Structure formats: structure tokens, C-alpha cells
Image (cartoon, rainbow, N blue to C red; front, side, top):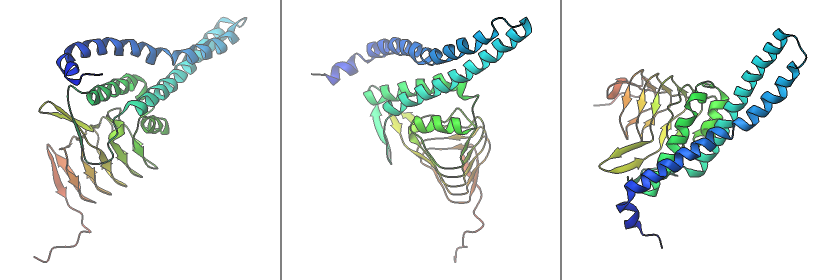
Length: 250
């Protein structure tokens, strides 16, 4: 029977072995999508046989580009599916676990899989391809959503409604580490909200319908931004209230 105390006591060794195994898995993650890419390259490049040198160069060049695009889609598909299988499910509220836990291991593996996609993901944002990848990885994304960042970390924690825009280089974290514990909590962007470029959103945040988080703002954990407000600053606070909100009688 598995002894949890032994796991915790030897976590440093488990972490070292796990890191080595993960590096080996990176070979598979990055290698398998190369198979169809190389097959596409071989198929197209053979059309250069017997052609003039310039035509051969052109065919080879376009074969490389098409093979690279095949690789991009293959890596996003493979990584997204793996994250969907492994990510920690949190329907609402928060989920807390010690750093020395299997939940942390699963979260760390998914984080590494996501980071492994960054070099290719950057070529397809914003686009339906990027949204499809995030959905595969566990995010709930509505219609007409524009995501212009590779920093949508912890996709399984994301609840993004229709017509949301996430600006370039924004960092959206569904996790935080405090007092030796990993805390995961969903983030919700309601309809028509806007997250400015380079903004940082921490776990448990709710951005109301039609609300705006300004460029470079930091929205601290568990904050709830009411509908129609504009928040900015470090840490972020309300800089413009909803003009449609009824005035107080006081």
C-alpha cells in the first residue's frame, strides 16, 4: 500500500526523479508532432526532383514552412490533450493542497506542458486556433473571444464568457503559493470585459460584465470587479465606476 508519509519524507528525491522523467517526456511531446511534419516535408520536397535550381529552392522553402505549420498544430493538439487529461478540476471556490502532494505534481506537469507550447503558440495568437488549444487544455471559452497572450496559465481555471478581449502579454494565473500550500481557484471574465495588455490577474478574480482592467494593472487574488467598472493601478482599484449604477439615497 502507498505510504503518504514516505512520499512526503522523500519528496526531494521524488522531485529529482520526476524532473528527469519529465525531461524524457518533453522529448516525446516535442518529437511526436515532428513525425507528420517530416512526412509532409518529404512528400512536398520530392516535387523539386528534376526541376531547375530556383524551382527546387522554392519548393524546398515552401515545404519547410508548411511542415513547420503542421508541427505547430500537432504540438498544440498533443499538449492540449495531455493537459486536459491531467489538470486539476476545480468547479468553484478554491482547492488547497500542500506543495508536497500529487495535486501539486499534476499542476506542475500541466504548467510545463503549457510552457512547452509557448514558442509555437505565439505564432497563432490571437486566433481561433489559440482558443481551441486553450479549450483543449481545460479552459471554458465563449464566442468571439480574443486572447492575445501565451500567459493564460492554468487553462483549467479559466471561465471566459462571450466577447472578452485579453490583451497582449497579460498574465492570468489560476494559482498562488502561500505558506507552503498550492491554492487553485477559477478566474471568471464576464461578457464583454477587457483585460489590458501586460495586466496581471491572480486566482479567484471575477471581472464583471463590460468591465475593464487597465494596462499594467495587478488585480489581487479573490477580487470581484463589478459590472461596467474600470480598474487600474498596482494593486488595481476602481478608477471609474459604472455610470449606469443608481445613486445612493444616503
